[in-house]
View 1 (cartoon, rainbow, N blue to C red):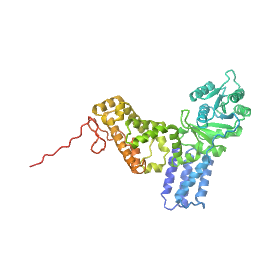
View 2: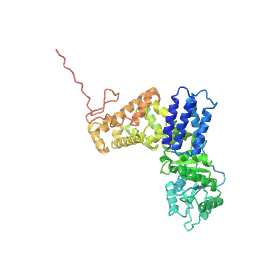
View 3: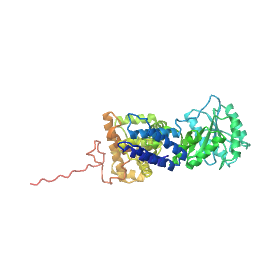
View 4: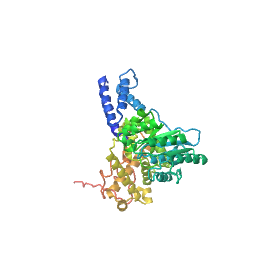
Length: 496
């Protein structure tokens, strides 16, 4: 998300840092570029104009931070204003002691309301320890209620329905009574939508609101529609009174104009963003973290949370012990690859790391094509290891020529690719041993070299060994593999 805007802002601010002395004309030129970047990102014209005015006022004003250089001050001002533009602080769902708490999900047809209802229920159950109940009051769209039943089953959440009733208000009222009687603390109401805003739709929503008295009314909008989503949110807020916004398809929106405009136009914050089709692909919206991503500062907090949620801590600690004892096997290497895959794509992980950190360890900014190439290499690596026996994974030294030919056939690769993987694995073990002896597992050039090796930055096809080309045993402290002959040095005959 925000790729287009992020690239332009980073380029503009980088040019600004190149100026030795920052003059008003430098600031004006930078602000012109920023304003153009915002408009190209489909940000509301008035929002972009006000944003630039606030940045100019602070950049040319009397506010000075002694620890920052002039160009860095402008970057800080832009960051602070971006955070404010996106909503200031993170806005979470507010629950009361009353039970059940009702959350209405509203929006236009096709925006993703029903799927978002299921995603929010799953998120509340996993992260807030809530016990949600779902109900659909969309009696107009064919199979709308059936769709919510399918989603509820897939996410393991409870659902209420009255098959014989087509009265939206009655469905909401009875669902509320059922939630109260059976101990559900949250009722999520998936309401009907239209292709456009009309009086009949709004009257129905107002009646459901009056009947259930929701603590939250969340407007679901398709981020890809840009300013249309902002205008619809504004109208829903005027007619019904929304308390927050859920933006879907944010993973496919390179511009981000809706997210940057909606808080300023409606006064209501973005609370969740949908970042994929899976039911767990829903994230709380953090303005400060989003601003950091846009300006290339990374989002390490989100990465840490992702690791904590998806990486087995006991398994990671066990692998760390093996590294310290130099017992890290190919099977452990495969487990590490699988843990990385749980975090998402390589490009997603890289975007969460600060540009400055990536530059310091020698990792370039990846294009989508490069990221896809690395993903393919990782799959190939896993396929090669999968084709090995347990004995071979435990001790790579027994991998003689015939074994490597068999592994290549089993994994659909070449012997050269198998040889290259073993070479990379041996080099990685050496680096891990060096780090272990030094008592550290990061810092300096070693970390960059190890990361590049693990992520396959050199690629298996580059410098791949042919079938008869063996690992350079002399330059390696690892014992030669049994069954692999050493290269014999040619002795020159002494001339008499």
